[in-house]
Image (cartoon, rainbow, N blue to C red; front, side):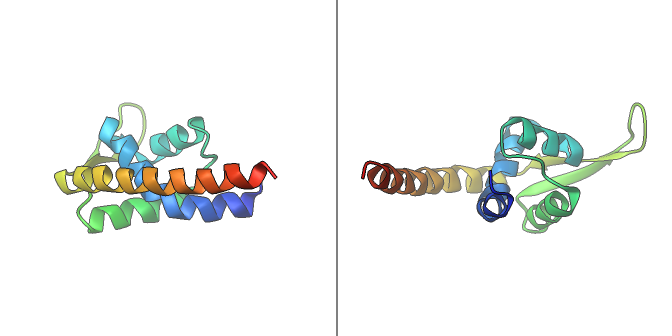
Length: 112
């Protein structure tokens, strides 16, 4: 996949993906990056992910808490808030409608 194109698409949906992962369970940055990569989104660098987490925290969509690590340094765990959960539900519906529309256009264009 073209990395520049992937980056453009990712900027539009990374917040939503992070909220969806945190709705499953609380997590820390590296674990979130691994989950995103495993889901096929591709590798996410800390310089991309941590500003997203900070923005979500500042807007009240996630909360964070430092915890001592079992084998290593402390980690900052993120958890979705009630406001984040509401935003996730609303935005997921918006994304579904948007992606359905884009999919329909692309399918129509590929039949020519």
